[in-house]
Image 1 (cartoon, rainbow, N blue to C red):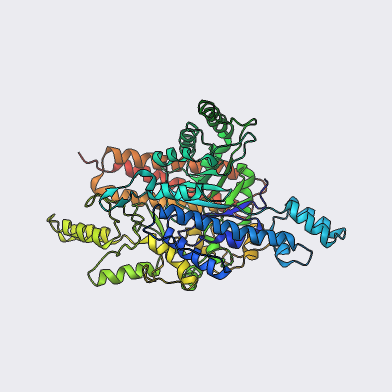
Image 2: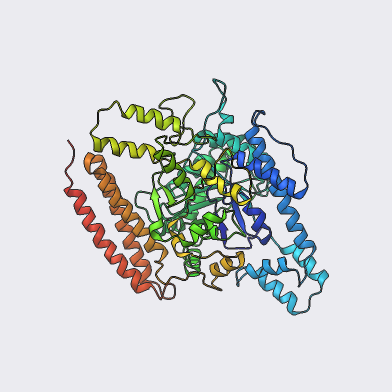
Length: 602
């Protein structure tokens, strides 16, 4: 079925898009729910059930397979509530229905749906005709879900380790697979072979003879090689990837999975050039495996979408990505944190986001996963963390344990942001006989970790005035660098008008082009890597940094070719972009020279 919009709302944090489908799906907008926190989902299921007068039976944490059951129950509730709203819209459709008019007005100007509706109105279509048209033509936004594949904590009953299917990501997948949803799971954070192998147990992920799926698979990747490897791996199990969702390695929100200097433009170009080869390769593997399993082989070739996200902020950038790289959709994340009609953010955090500038947004090491994490200075979770440090009791009480993955001290795993882990790690540090400066450096790295698996969901509880006794009131928030240029709370109509070029919500005139911003972030990241490597510089490190810098130089050369060849797009910034690319090229040449001159450890 054709999509209503050319953008989608990616998953943000744990709680910021937890009920976004209920707010935007009736307008044909796709969005994604995080499945990390089943405790949060259960609290919201109770809240929505109470509000709607629906029966609610608690799924207790002592119940068998409680995590999967909570996720299934919450997703079923979202499915039913979204369906109810969408059916009501179609049944009450008329030329005076405000929701229908909002639906139509938010569509792209070039939308066939919009043109057909306006034509029907212009010829005086009556209420019955409008209702019939709406019933046949309006499309609902997808209720997709996200699973971070590496957040797959093993679980225990007492001291007995449970089977893999009770691991956190496995249980989340099962919860989605057993739900009513006809949508897709976004698999992010890299490949988890055990989890991918577990998917074969659910028939909804396999196609029928017409090539239709009840449940689809979306892979979030940062380069072509990853897409090819993971796409083939899944195809060998008879599983088809229905979308490759390409995300900028660093110019994004949440966790930042830095590539080896591969910039978004060249990555998208590689997908564009190799799209057919990628399709043919994995489709051939898929058909062989489906035959081997005696499953249905689709009569027609299956298709997949290619989408991108990370740092896009203007209509011109949005259109360029779609047209130049033949994309099916573009993800808009961080700006939607300022749209209460779409996301769930508490009032205090909303204010902090609105006034944030470049210096307030930084790539941090606070994530317990050990992956760089985009952070907002002054967030209340970090303030809470500092308060505990000041009391000489660093670390979180770890009430939810979703990222209790470290096994240095315990087979069952401990979170590196927890009080238990930090106490044990500092105790170990005390025995190493380090100098004062060395000790402080190691100590700061230990206590820097923050309880994000709680903090990224707390905002939703605060926004709905729900109990936070277990979680506390500290909020973590993870906007991308692009947030600096959006400085006002917006309505859903405001942001869609901005995306489609009907309005401009950015007041600042100094926002850099999407590609230049990402390039600067990568160069800063490279410089930090070089600085942190100086004390232990070796041949392996030198090779990595050289490759990183050379890839960036190739990216700069690619962009120079693109922008020099442009006639219409980016006319107002073309000269500036080319000048910035020339500067970046000189900087990278200097960096490469410096890398060569670094003394190498014997």
